[in-house]
Image (tube, rainbow, N blue to C red; front, side, top):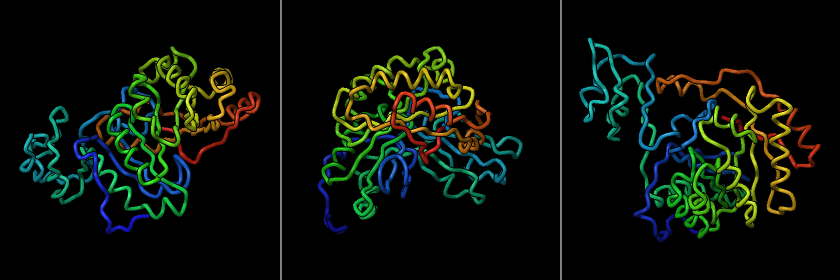
Length: 319
């Protein structure tokens, strides 16, 4: 392991990507203690999405209306007029672009504003996560690239994974698979583990609740399974979407057929539905589209055993 004072050679100064957050000390989304880099941008619009700020590239503004003092400081500072005042009431013009100066966030006396989204080089992202290198090595952990959809920024992902692998850091990619094969292959080809989300075997149902067909997703998964990288198939278990016995059976039957004889298949992880991300919709002034109860994980467990699929319920929650 290099000392923290020893410089690392950078090869990626010109490779940039959009990220929303880096979550440190995670015990999910791969083995050991991990840092998770959340990339921005996703073409899917899952009705239950817990990370709406990850759907678009660029910057989003979380606005805590209940904290706002309507003092007008942000309106005076904003170079793009994203913030304004109307009869002494703060107005957020969300159709305007955030310039990323973050002056509103820094100077808001009520901490009512948070800018989400940062355009960073792969080198910068690399140096940030490597601050926890000692934890990765002691725990057998590493770094996971998540989203959004990682394959929306395949070159950024590729360069970042290459830098991490050069330091012998375990890398994982989480993907929902909705991208061209070229982008999927570019984003995942160098990583140690692929966490592949698969939501439904029924195309019409998939289109209705995610906005896209599942055909590309299934096709990309089949091609990845032909390679040598370890793959865990993750199912977000969503009430009234895929947790009924017939729908669970169709999905697990598909997985059984796709993974038969594939030694790189490491099993199925079930991600129980949660509503932890609903508050983000309010901060973005958007409606949350999936107010339902608890998912029936037991259906998936019993049917997975029927197909003799290795399965576990993950500590990571679906969203």
